[in-house]
Length: 83
Image (cartoon, rainbow, N blue to C red; front, side):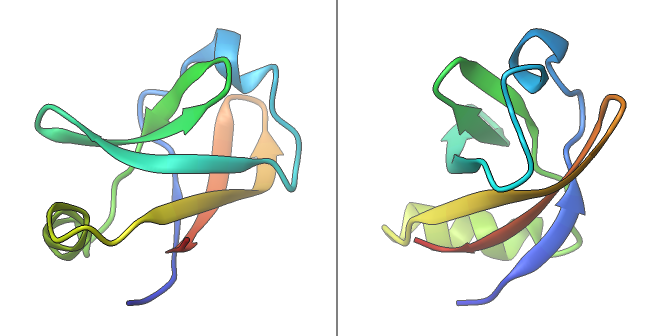
């Protein structure tokens, strides 16, 4: 288990506008991608050098959350951590 800071890839602007710094997102597998899920929908994809490890942990049943740490226009920075 670990924490990781990353910027969401392919951010969904209609979901991003519902977020604020401190918002908690659910990290989930969506087909071949790992996504950050908000109440309003998928906020964006998780990209990380540790993505294979994150996928392995999710497949093993470990749950992760992503806390929004910064929003700069369409760029959303999140900290991923065990839930």
